[in-house]
Length: 205
Image (cartoon, rainbow, N blue to C red):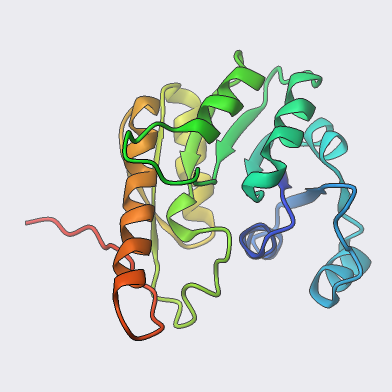
């Protein structure tokens, strides 16, 4: 399986490294403005020669993880629109800017850009600055949702492959709820006086 991870974020880099260590082939898609000379990315590119434009990463990949900053989402969606997405799976790992209506503009943009591709939501609880938001490495789970059953099994296995517990959150129309958890954790952190990050853990009773 070949993964394409879109975005020059720490989340993209971290997930990519985890999947490379798990033995998968990974290609990183970045914008033309991205500085590939930054130390970690320079080393990653030198060892694996895997950094390329968004459209090239999409073409090469079977599974596409969107981990970009919101500023670059329109560029990613433009690349998706112009690509042949037959047989590919798309996983949205982003969080839209918070609004109280719980509308999910990032996911909506991606669905419009790739209307025939199976699209899922996962890893967004980590945030694009992960692992900086989890310096102790305590986050061991991610919620995911989507509509296509055979592909959903593949997404679950993909999550578990790098050590996360995959929690099925139902169908794709629940994607705004996954983002709500992320934004609530940020609001809690913002209202505390100490510089800490807050995360949710699912428990069963």
